[in-house]
Length: 157
Image (cartoon, rainbow, N blue to C red):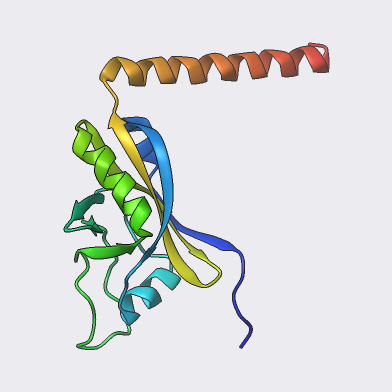
């Protein structure tokens, strides 16, 4: 069987970039059981409620929902169990230092297959205030209007 290559996105957390100002991102491996991988290959996961925590020098992902594998037996996994993230020690130290400063959270941004292995992109983010969100929406709308007007001028309308 040929080895898998490339990247296939399983789930993205679009709400994270809306609710948090992401400062740093890291790519981490994730420790999974066999039926979890099979369920992910079917494209089933929800990272909307998930969050990361540093505990005893290790990073864990809580509330990541991977539904039970439908063809699984009694060996199926728990859908919302705590999963360990696989990072280098220096990366863990940087993350722990940033989170313990206060006001920062560790949020998963996307879950994907990379060369046949499951990876999670995590970001260190600072929560946005309501007015920050409104500013971002206004900026995005203004950019869209500019693009549309430029398109109209190019077409001669």
